[in-house]
Length: 165
Image (cartoon, rainbow, N blue to C red):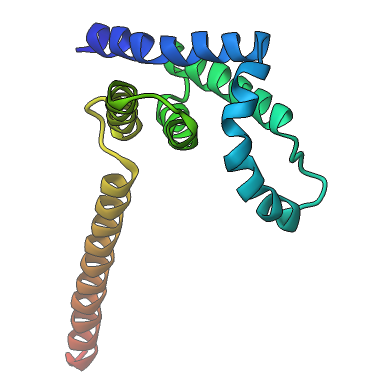
């Protein structure tokens, strides 16, 4: 299953890497498309931190860089789950600003579905939730066992003190 996962991740990541590089080379093609969205989020960004960039061209370049970096991480198998989550989060505003037809929307939804699957894929290994819940269960059993042993030994000591001798 490992080669299939690797190939699928590389194929899924390729569109983000290519599109990110294309956008970095020609950011002006996306700037006008994202301007309505950036006009809405600029006050939120300025309120969060006035030092953050609010220029649409800069925001487009930042998204392109994150797409390339996260796409390469996904394709190479490094930090695959966070990379897929970053790509999925970046795909939502991209889909909102895309002025395409129904086919573009369905393509974006298909990519989002693949990214969500990649974001939750543990490659057959237990996830963090499973490992922590089972570690807690094991530690609770260990504590109960230690308490039972201590009570039993205390009863033995108490009984030994009552013996004449």
